[in-house]
Length: 278
Length: 272
Image (cartoon, rainbow over the protein chains, first blue to last red):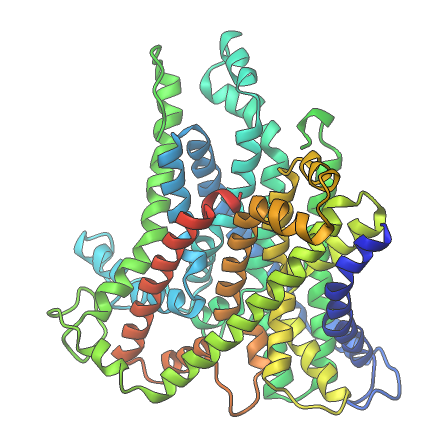
């Protein structure tokens, strides 16, 4: 970088070092210390986390939650992006607008509306009972299924937008050629369109996954007090139990868990044929 | 909507039908909650239920006297305003440098500035609190704003960098060769061309800050309450209809702001 470029980056870089990098370093130091005064070092908090099945089951449940929400997002997100890419500009804008709407609406408000929908006398149960699909109200609120549905709704744009970006850059001649050579629409999707759009799919999965596992408000309000995921676990240890070093250790473990999955997903892009890269 | 070719075959129709059906279901789930919250907030009765028993604006009138809620909303607006200003100015400057340079250092900065988007915000909020205590300080509004800037800057960076890649570098050179200085070139040539990208990023940063819970949870002092946390406590303790009215109001304002952002900054295009 040239000197005048450095000058432009410097203010933000300084801000990040002071209020992002430094706090994270202190967090790591705290996670390795005996008490809140960082003086004597120990790995005890990490040992405690991994020897207690309660702790690592929370980590595991959080990862599983992220995977389920990501898969649900992909199942609905890919068709949305596919249709968007083929739609006329006006329709495309309108559809995207609807997709972005939930993520823009305040998280607490959005979660509140889901409580009205998923509750025992909520909208979904009224519909299900009214249609005779079920004889008694379904339990949706305070269940993992409820959390997954709400997460998928909120994170949908994070899946749709990267896929759409790749799909709209794809050369339409390739799908036309596939069709001309006799492949049907499903075969073309499976053999041509999907492989070409994999970088977008992976980018979408990374964003959806990391947003889902860290969605503190949604997890806590829809999941309730009995479904504990990593963010709530950190909060309870930090604020409820006032055990800062242990909360710091959980935070570090959680960050690594998120980054490892992101890294693995990123690694997938390397094994792709070079023409599928953007 | 799918465009139908002249040569329609059943297989192509089946794919389109399946994809259109999935999209239709998704749209119901995407839009439904916002509509339901709006309708619920118009209820005339004391209880939150859908469909509402009779329509009235009484709970919106009740908002006018909700002092605590108004104070929390005002705090959130101030924090979001300063977060947006700082994120936009520093984010745009950094984007200019990162997009011009092809060096490894520029990639490192890019990765650093984008990382708050992937890392758990709650862990960062806690880290920031620990750091502040280690320095012997206490949480306060300026720290809260700094924390918000860290998690909101990626939005500005992403849209601005995307806008900058569309920019023809020859334009800057032309401006320089015509005698314009760097600042003049930025103000008269670059900024007007990337303005929509910066605007969309600023809008996203504002919304992200206004809506932030995980960082505010740790960095707001005891006397400061931001709107999302206030609403959250209302929902957890007494689910009253005023909360629904506040939620309805937020949905309407968000929708209007999104429409404005779409009109002036081409929001949906900038986010791609």
